[in-house]
Each structure stands twice: as structure tokens, then as C-alpha cells.
Length: 98
Image (tube, rainbow, N blue to C red; front, side, top):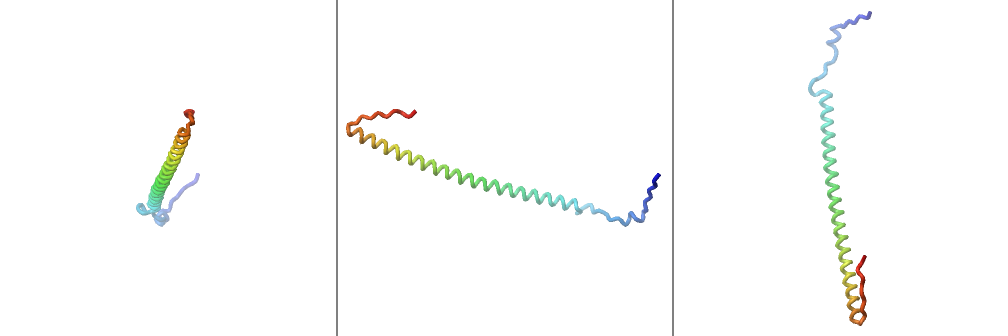
């Protein structure tokens, strides 16, 4: 049988943990700091994505406008050529696109 004895004089010399402001409080503070940094990072990334999305949308609209301008120009040219051919007595029938 093992006997356990505690010397009360020794237990009083052990360091006491602080209940407020100790290591646990520092860890909680670090977690809050990291969460705040993550929130700021996410907000920054969302802003960057929104800016890039707006830029891509603008480029798409510019490209669509340019494509429409070219189609209108080609249609005008084709109609002009058909009119010229018609004035020269040629009867050309165009079939509708399939």
C-alpha cells in the first residue's frame, strides 16, 4: 500500500493562476483578432471580385456593341449590293438562313 502525504507548507508556495487577464484571456483576444482579420480579408476579396466583375461586364457590353456595329455595317453593305444588282436588271433571290 502506498501512502500519499501532502505537505501544506509546500502547497502554499505553488504559483496561483490569475482568474482575469491570464493566458485564457490572451487566447480569446488572439481569436478575436484573427476573426477580425478574416472578416476584413473576405470584405476586401468581395470588393475585388465586384470590381473585376464590373470590368468584365463593361468589356462584354463593349464587345457586343462592336459586334452589333459590324453586323449593321455588313447588312447595309449587303443591301446596297443587292440594290445595285437589282438596278442592273439582275433578279437575285436570297434564301432565308437555315
